[in-house]
Length: 386
Ligand SMILES: Nc1nc2c(ncn2[C@@H]2O[C@H](COP(=O)(O)OP(=O)(O)O)[C@@H](O)[C@H]2O)c(=O)[nH]1
Ligand SMILES: [Mg+2]
Image (cartoon, rainbow, N blue to C red):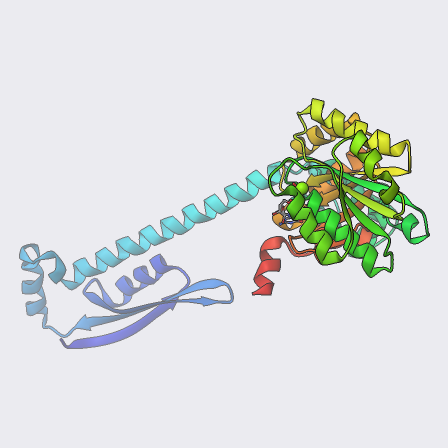
């Protein structure tokens, strides 16, 4: 095929390019090449066209025969219209896509109140980040306003300073490190992480020079429960006692009372099983009549926020001294820690961030919580590890 003219047309608007082609070389142009590029974030099109080398007479005959041609054998004019139609469709789709994008943006903005948009830009971006991580709007706004009112920069360091007004932090091991003797009971629903966390806490003690630590299991009936905690006690080289009721506690008391710290891995019960929760409460009360005992409620971040409140309600049969948030590695919305922590007004003791014993535990602190809330979400954390 011979072309009398080959020309390149380029620009940002495909429709305009085709108008120009039509104007310059007429509708006999044949598309010889097409390219799309992204230049500085903008779409850029290049179309190369050729004009067939025919005499006007030939051209006329050619056009007269057009109707009889097969579809794949399209004459140049028809070919040109066909491509122009496609480019019009592409332009339409682009407009639709932009419309959808704006719509999504609008829906997400609908959750923002006009007042929030008036926040200075860095504060607004901190506010948005907190919302994206599941922090309740009122808490997020109040934190950002605190930072602004104290003339601080809305960064991680200011955030870790102001969150102490919303949640408190207390490490239950601090008085043990100072020489105090006590029992620590871990309570919570089944599967929340009590046994693994008991092992992790005993490991922290041992690593910090507190050797007089024992584990007390209160579940002898569930298959594998003694074996699981025994495995951890053996790894840690610490003794394990098992007692399921006050009578049995009396039986092992002489041995138990020798230890500076006894960590009790209580039997897991549903937050709705109040009858059995009362049994755990009574065991704790009984130990409390002999020695100082503190209760830590474990809440799993893989649970819904509303369910966590029900867990707290169910376990309020006993006085809860501390909270541990577990399975933080399993959520993209750790804001729940701040929401629930501030609502319950119970100090945060530890955060657990994985299955590995003893590594996946952090002492709760403003810095640790800031890293969890403002650090990379789990998806990117895992991506970095690969
Ligand atoms: N991803 C993740 N899994 C955890 C965490 N803590 C415990 N688990 C897992 O949760 C499951 C139940 O833990 P377990 O300690 O037996 O819970 P319990 O029934 O409350 O004693 C086990 O498979 C643990 O390895 C955590 O912080 N993150
Ligand atoms: Mg257990």
